[in-house]
Amino acid sequence: MGRLRYGMLVSLDGYARDASGSFDWATPDDELHGFVNDQERDVRTLVYGRGMWETMRWWQDSPADDEPGAAPEHHDFAAMWRAADKVVVSTTLDPPTEPRTQLWPTLDLDRLAALVRDSPTDVSIGGPTLAAHALRAGLVDEVTAYVVPHVAGGGLPWLPTGVTTGLALREQRTFGTGAVALVYDVART
Image (cartoon, rainbow, N blue to C red; front, side, top):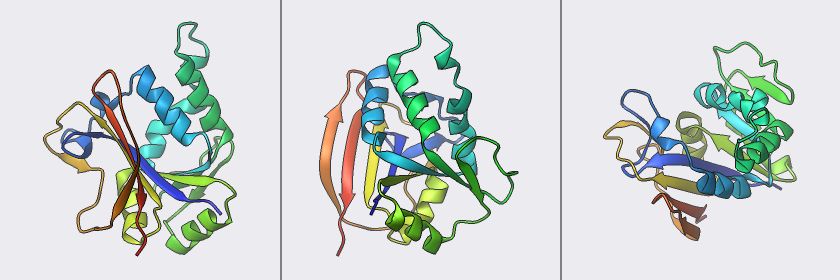
């Protein structure tokens, strides 16, 4: 049985995107990227909303594979991403042509719970809008904030309003850039 994990690069004030829709400030350096890789190494299924899918599909044909100076962390992540099964939840996208990828027209929480329950490895849900539904339904088992040293001043929050839950800190790490990773297990009552 897998666990459902939600992790996001976030500003210090809790945003995944700023008011202009940008998240350029959230690009991880190689050290943080390596840590994220290690965190995601045992995830074999990725569940994305449309916005996160459009960002992450870049890894399918990542130019990092052809760049001689590309960081090993980029090659590593690209290989892990390609090897994972992907579920894209969207009412507006055409079915993806990328391998190992399926389209769900809506997020069926029972179907998501079954996917996680039947998975031999952990499942990751990406994107704050989609993850909000899973958080509200109590399906998320782990929450990770990769806090970068930036104040966005508004935008798309990485956590939904109105959701309360206890968290147990399992791991924390500080990086040379000033970024901090905070890995929490969701407390079940």
